[in-house]
Length: 493
Image (cartoon, rainbow, N blue to C red):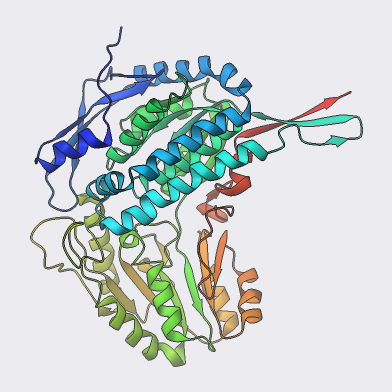
């Protein structure tokens, strides 16, 4: 028998953190209650800014997974039968509460992930708020009854119980993107957040509880991927897995899920190219590329435009612009005045990124700015670093770094630029810059990527999001997002 525990609200967690205490986030949320995990272990959560322990979360067990999946399965029939407009009301209220508590959730996000406060409010919370509202509206308008084809009625039904396995870089956004779409479709969920930055997701789960989402519709089990994640993916009563994370982990999930032939949606890595054509405004192209690479969550984003392809004859110009802009990127803690880039999320990530910087130096790439020394005595900081004279066969041009590192690659002509851009196992995002919009659009169509920005076109959270090749399977966001969670049935009459 499990015992109920207090909800880890944003207010209670912030009160503890502001006093220098350690948050107890060891409860899991199953069947409408915060309860103790049946796992004996506890996982330490560290502050990215000063490396101090700020929280403990449960090291969940397979028994926790069994309870959560059983609750989700039991809740499924009633939730699927709930009118879409009523499901939409829950989503809308969650989004409204997030918006009302933006300052508090923004601070928690900054303490959790390390990003400066304004960036946290704009992206870490702005995107979830949008998605809860978007899927509330879509649930009210979507045609679940489909169309009549001859003597067949085509209907859309929820796929069932969904395991949502989410990363640490945009924790609330990734949960919202999956859960809002799944709820709109009529599915129930079990969420396994990253143990690296879990506090924002626990606070979000408390909002689901506050708005009265029926028991079993939303469940949260913290823990390690090798235990909780694997158990969810292999579980026969889980109908679908939606995963965001590394390509390596995505391959493992696909392998395990194949045992029960369940649907898998994978949003994986990227090594995205920003193609600067010879007639482009170099200042705009480099500044726009940096905003979507180093400047985007300190490079911890799967869509980061980390390869910048420039005409060989304009390489020196590109280097000058990149160095001048990056040298203005002050690093610091989320609450330090003037901070542009925060720390990386963990010691593991910091060491990984520093290893890639060393690899770039060893393989002969030229450092334009940055390097191995952050100048900080504590915290998981990495100085934003730009390499030039990078060959596309170098490690820093092939592998996803997930940090504030940019590689500038020269090319000879447009055909070579397209070839280099597409010469990667990934295909998540790309960009094209040109003084001729039609030319840029033509090149954009040649790039094998799921999203392509043209001359700085803004990110659209209502558009389908996903990748080609080893960047994943399926699409999130927009109308395509809800369809991932639906089965199609033909009823012959």
